[in-house]
Image 1 (tube, rainbow, N blue to C red):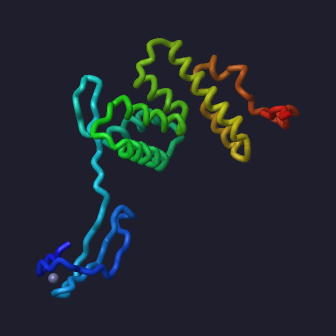
Image 2 (cartoon, rainbow, N blue to C red):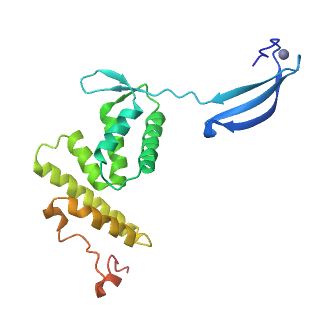
Image 3 (cartoon, rainbow, N blue to C red):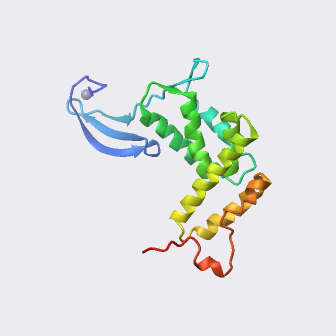
Length: 205
Ligand SMILES: [Zn+2]
């Protein structure tokens, strides 16, 4: 850039460092003509898309609104503020990466559900039941079943050191779900019995 003091087109950079928690670069510059020094800040220009609602109305993407929806779903759940912040920044990042000028409210909702699914099952079901307007109890149960199957598959795949912690977390969440689901005979009971050593193992030929 031109020197802001004398307008000379050439300046040199004496120092360059991160600022604004890494979101900016600050450069210390010196004019080659008059010798004046000044700082410049460089930051990414990020434009968030406009959200298109179901009635076709447009509104600016509102991070606070997304957070409020997540917090409502996670009320009194064992999810920390920090976890919500992290999930929110992943959502914002995904929205940015899409790079579109408009995004449907539906897509934003799906991104939120994706995060909630990992954070907390109860929060996920709460959000999904409002968001997807489950038409009847059956649809609601289908979703819970689907969720449980997906989680069991994930556990079977990653049955390692984190296993007992995951189980403890599950035990905490199960009683909050409908009884019929919590008692599902198919769920791998956290048993310490003799079968425990073999559980999840597959005969590999
Ligand atoms: Zn100058």
